[in-house]
Image (cartoon, rainbow, N blue to C red; front, side, top):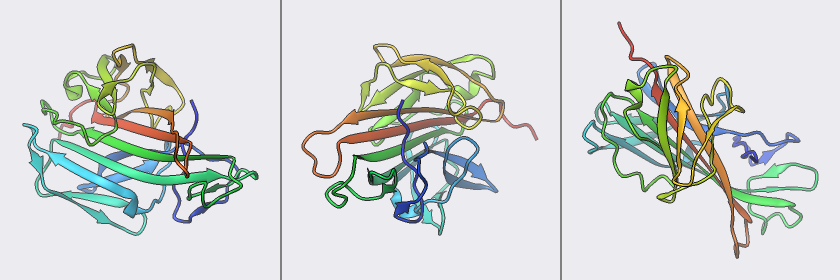
Amino acid sequence: MRISLPLLLAGLVVCGQASAHGLWTEQRRGNHEVIYGHGAEDDAFKAQKISGAWAYDGAGKMIPVTVQRLDDHARLQPLRAPAVVAVALDNGAWSQTPDKQWINQGRSQVPNSTHSLHTYKYSLAILAPGAQLPALSKLRLAIVPQSDPLAVGPGKPLRVQVLVDGKPAKGVKLIGDYRGMPHEVSATTDAQGFAEVVVRNQGLNIIAAELYQPVKGDKDIEEEGLFASLTFLGQAHHE
């Protein structure tokens, strides 16, 4: 699996090697924070790159939500407590130069580039037991639970289906614990996009998938990169 590109506040990445970064949401201090990171990393990012945010109640009906774009990250502000939250981030076009630096521009602007791609990242969070999922057409890559993930419990398998542009995706590798073990593949989807992933944690679970597909006839990129996460609590909180 190729790695995705880092998103930094500057347009030029000065590190010699790009590192994989994903997208998910967490509830912190009563807020729905958008997290951009890899494993235990939680990095700053341009909040303007959040291209969409959606919130729904337990019946799958939309709740109005606004995006608070802070200096180093984004925060979601739904009108009332949601049961499901989804976010999309457009990471833009990136080109790698011969000296292994990444520039946040397409190859038409980086004529000496050796590789160029456009990455998109998506997050789906299940926050309430028994929540009905809405249509997920806004998410080009989605990990869709086939049962209530909050009712499965740690150590037990959760059946999911991976969809790319609404169609089942075969052979997609799933990371069962993106925060704790971001390089360990837990399952691979079958011909219908299905797989079983063991629920790892009593607290927050982040299941992730990433894939790349070629693009033809584009002056700026030769490839698209898609990342998706599914987050939920493995066990309900008890006060």
